[in-house]
Image (cartoon, rainbow, N blue to C red; front, side):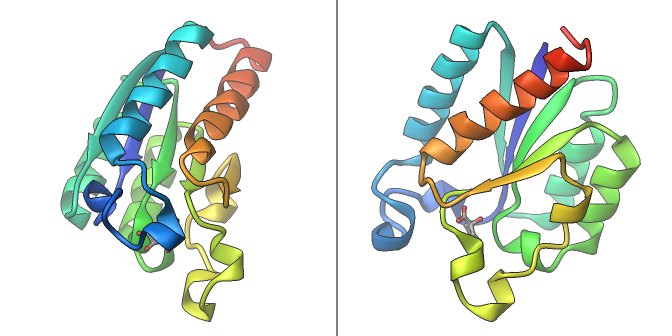
Length: 148
Ligand code: DQA
């Protein structure tokens, strides 16, 4: 089973960026923990981060035929990007929306996601653990629907 993890803008700054909101783990540390969890589950994990909306759209388009499922932390694009939503709808790869913070407990502009209603589910508010929790849910769903 092939799982892609896509990360949007400013997540490369985790560790130093607003640690009271996002914790002290770097994106590299979160990647290592997610990869090790993916190994334990017996699934492949491809990891990407970009600060650019068009690159995120292209990374989503490349998942066609190349991934069975995805974890998507689109960061600020979660709240604004119809282009990211359209790309996810176009490729029809099941995905879980992931956030470190609980976006529903934040400023009004962050409480709305333009991706959530087309996601399999949303995992947010568990800090770095959100990634592994989302991976568990995605893999269980895919296995229950006979992928991998
Ligand atoms: C985030 C939440 C977004 O609102 C924010 O723009 C981010 C990170 C999270 O993981 O909590 O950059 O996606």
